[in-house]
Length: 255
Image 1 (cartoon, rainbow, N blue to C red):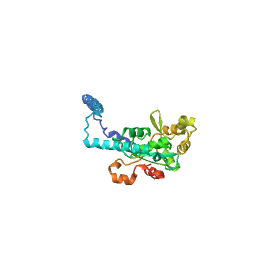
Image 2: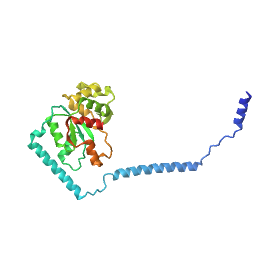
Image 3: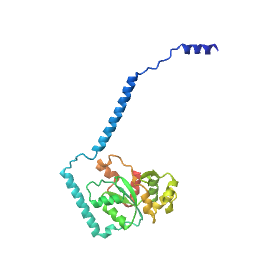
Image 4: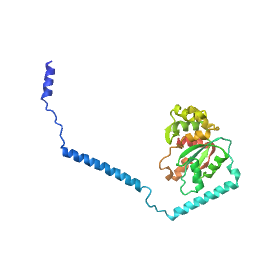
């Protein structure tokens, strides 16, 4: 009992630490300075947005020449496809293809740009599932120098959708983690869960177009500066064009 009393007396005898007081005028100055800094940062951001895209850009004459040569090659290649109709035939009897864009399309012809947009491959290293028909096969042949494509198996389709599958709902990107959401948007097509979605993509039916448009293009995993090292890039990714069932190896490499 005595020990507790002595401890209490010692605590009372210890001087209490005084909290340093800040003068009111200094607090007002600090608050005004913070408000001024916030206003300046906001104005700087607005000015940066205004300047973005409006600055003058100078292009060398060589860049115009390269763009013209690229467009000319596209015209000749597309003309050859029209002359040789057998070039548009499917190499194998498959109903599903997976296309990955692995090259930039700066300066290409308008037809190639339009076909890339129709395939939803606007971003480099993005991939989409495509139902093999004469129309889609012609589109793949048109963009073949910039896209690699082949025939995925069920395992590749499942791994892609489970790991990188995202849905487009009212211009919003939503991960495929809820079967209720899938049933709400695809239930009228007989798709009520993720397994049904994988089956409808792997074995295309009459509702393949609506189901594939429900999915966002797959953004594959590639190093940020991969395209700058051309030798290593070609060794790792391969050349664009048709690669048959070897597309499964590329999918596992980039997934």
